[in-house]
Length: 164
Image (cartoon, rainbow, N blue to C red; front, side):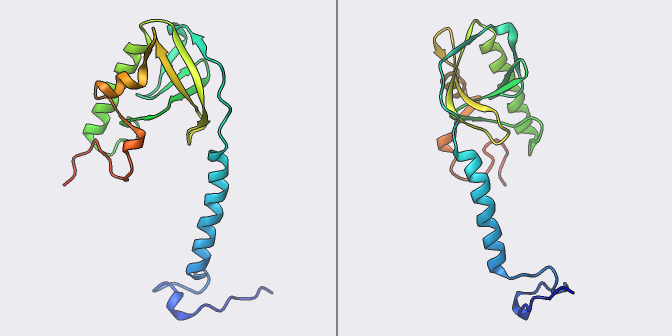
């Protein structure tokens, strides 16, 4: 026989039962536990390694900031580009496709120097700094308007969609 928790009526959901309501402190504790687990996995950066030179023919561009070398995906650190697959509006998808094409053109120019900078993205791709013929790809993408610096993105709004 299981014992039921006594939940004050002010904590109960309207129209619901006592079973799912455990109070506001339970939600905060669950959120904190999740943040510790997720934060610990993300906060442990992978050690930065030596640069690796890759031929342009080995690279497949996935989005404006993610590319693959063989089966290993990499994300360019310090920039954010518009999404393609889960775009929130037509304009974000259009800018995302343009960023994807721009990154493909930049990486096709010559041998690519990939340097791990430590850390991984939410999808598990290591963050890297990328240079093509001595030029930093991140700086060129930002200068041409295909990406924005990640540090400049403090709020949660989508900069590519028109805000009402």
